[in-house]
Length: 249
Image 1 (cartoon, rainbow, N blue to C red):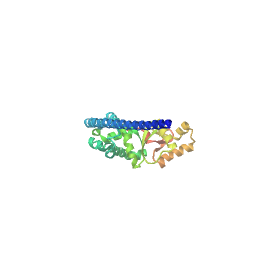
Image 2 (cartoon, rainbow, N blue to C red; image 1 turned 180 degrees about the vertical axis):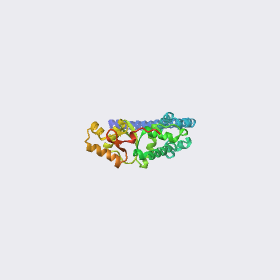
Image 3 (cartoon, helix red, strand yellow; image 1 turned 120 degrees about the horizontal axis):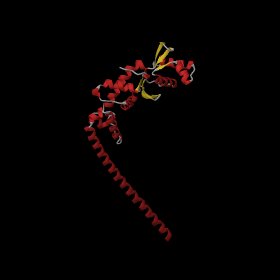
Image 4 (cartoon, rainbow, N blue to C red; image 1 turned 90 degrees about the horizontal axis):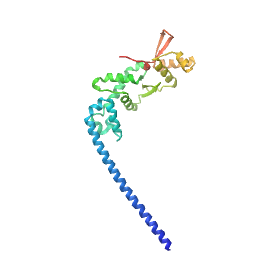
């Protein structure tokens, strides 16, 4: 009986220790949470003051804007994401519609150039044309701004997407996915300045003439991704891929 009593007493002490540790843990957790919340509130206040003071720089300077976005991402907010996602940040800073405004301009350029490029435009060309559309008063934009805005367009289901082919970024503005042969043709076109003939695909990829001809004809007739020159001086018949060509306008 004596040993049994000691065992029960030890069990009671163990249970009491567990309860005390649990209470201490809860107290520490509550204190830590309150401390983190206070730090977060302080950081939000400082960030809001910074954003209000430098609003014009955020809108006009891409480097400054990206640094600001990284600061914001650390607390899970994005003032440039629009009123719905940006919340009171968007309203307070007047930056909420900036991303959507840029998105509309991207759509404008993609649609207006689709007849000549079939819905595939090189990223640098898109940035250049959008910058021209915005004018000096619209502020400077760069590739990162365009990529962020394209992400906001994806829910529209219109096919807007950034693809990389042959080390170059292209923006697709049509729903149709590129097949493997089209990707190869675009890659070759990027290397050759936009001009491709059947022989290029046969020599560089080992394709049969039938496969090369079918790929190019599909891009021409079915997808509208290229033009044809039936009076080419060198080969008699050549295909030009507008998205791989440099445009000056």
